[in-house]
Image (cartoon, rainbow, N blue to C red):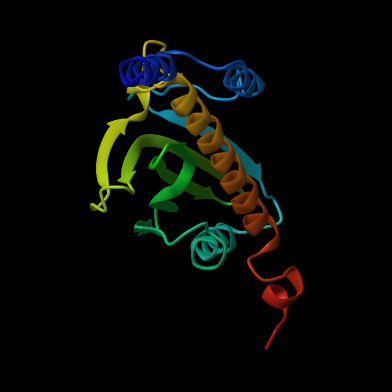
Length: 204
């Protein structure tokens, strides 16, 4: 009986590690064509905003202000070059996906880089997903979490042969969603300001 249960668990783990569920497949189909690999093997998205009513300085300060007011989580590193018109921010999307199995759970976090290039009346936003941190938590053992890092292009679905297709497929789908949310929020902050158009344009 115990042997049969053990074999059943091993089979379940094996299937989970290699298979992709129908739900995951449909999730990935919904975002097909919305992402692409760059020359470094990372996932990079681009958005260009035409802002003829704003100066280079206004765009620059609004973009920088977003990371002070509205960015998800605290940026881990910000590099600024006002003269060049460039802002580069490194951050991490915490818990893009959490997978649980019995008393164990895996928390997946996704590293990303946002680069903003500013000109008079125009800006380009590049957002790159680079790597995952996998945080393994073993509740029964009471041990500290075990964290491993891996490049995003080594995991499914970027790598079709990657393991844990369901878990990593969901992680990628949700990381993509977080990236799109950052794009939308950052674009809105640049167009409208980080507080309100009235307050930002009001003399004091």
